[in-house]
Image 1 (cartoon, rainbow, N blue to C red):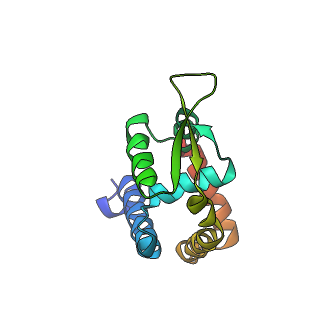
Image 2 (cartoon, rainbow, N blue to C red):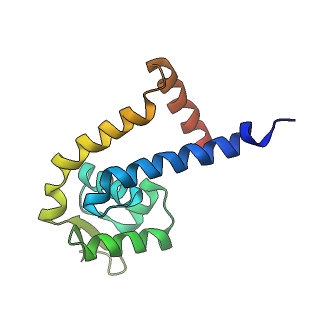
Length: 137
């Protein structure tokens, strides 16, 4: 029997907590949570997708994503716009302020990822990514 400190669930939770704490520290000046930063990254890749598409791509449930979008909208980083052909849908678009953060925040995110993964070799990082992708679904 594995002791609790070496159980997969415990270790995954602790790794997640550490990563979130480091993200909060890195992005504190921007008043962004790790989840909000993640949504901005999806929108920097493809702006103007529906809320449902954003929810699906980010794998964040519809209720939670609604709150995240609300906060980013209140911060002036994105807007909800009516969909042209579907009255029930909203398009999520970055504002100029949201787009302008990309060049500043992406390097910070990359630096933070290097910091989090620094104890691992390149091969270990590749294996970790492959394992996490398998566990994700």
